[in-house]
Image (cartoon, rainbow over all chains, first blue to last red; front, side, top):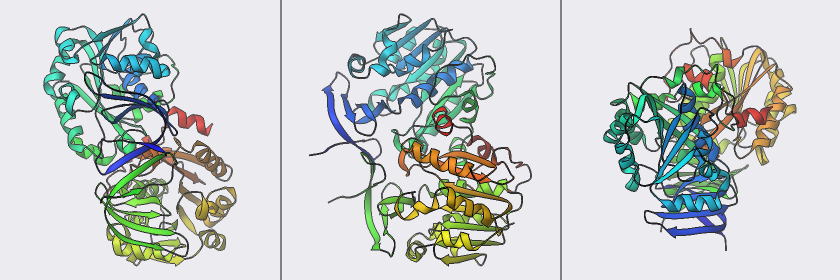
Length: 275
Length: 275
């Protein structure tokens, strides 16, 4: 008997993956956590039935959510990741030698624990001495830290249910206060193809708070539609026109300096959504 | 009982769509043709179980395979489409007033017939007086016409089975001879994520024939991985540096003049595949 995993985010258009083996499945304090080994994409983490990351394509998401803001900022020293318990974003942040400290604020300890065990290629940065792990609510953490981080990365699940509070104007205002005066915020912000209203709402909420707000796209095969948006809110630096001539070379599989600019050039239907 | 269509191109990573109604399913002379109405994406054409086009996302493919070569060429008058029986590419070509004649060379008459009936939004251009439909083998047609077309668009199924001969060096040589002296060729060339070897082989085959060969990407939700490649072979004009300052404005949902340049900026892993 073949076992298949059904990806549950978009009703009526469901991705399915043939599963070799279930490595862990448990109800954590917050969600249904599952790590399976699939034939097509290797090991894969799902939370409440939604694919979060896979060995084969995780690099796209983690590189783009990290290197765009970190290379836009001239000298990021302190970075906060809200969510991101799989560790992939921390791994990418640590490629920037200017960074002195990364705080990972993850609400669900079990995500970290299981990813350390079953996804070591992704979670490897979590044991780095520069990385401080804080188990708790991101909203509370951000509220209690002011003017502290150069970059804040909201590496959350989707804006429905548990992570809903991590999207929207009131949280972005807190984020802005938690950032230093030239700080940059970024979040994953869903698929414009299936969820145009969500993309528009989140973009407008960020725009109401940050002087510079930009959306860019990346091709992520395991997220619905395969074409995913990220939204940046910035106090000073424009990511689209960032001077990258003196940035260091880092080892990547998706990000390039040329793509740093090109990813902000949007298809017409996405421009129309944001108008 | 719910009916679901399973998309069969990539083994072990299968997209499924909930189906409202099957509009037609038949064995044609060449393939298994099916048009269904789906909840997520509206009406959808499949050939041998592979999604070819859907009402909701067809514009990405048809705009990008058409406007990139037609705007790169300074004055395209005669255009050949090999395959493309759904008519979407012809519809986009007819938006260019310089075009005097489009020949659609489709091997399977039933594709045209059923798309005219069930996908009129896509097939609408096929009845235009500038469009000449030729039912027959594209390889033979190209062989028998020399120095005739300004642009040739290979709008085919995948390079396995029936359409295999439409990919590769010997056909590209014939294409080159069928083009005028400043002619441009383009083909859909699969997903670099799942089929890197195919993308590399087709690119190298085109490069061996054309002075200028370029690959670009577009986000197409219903094709495997959602991130699709197109390969251009050009005798004179470089699509990446084309002067678009005097091109006319046309009605599009994906293509823009800015994206015409940006889509050629490739993620690192695709650059690596092509090296």
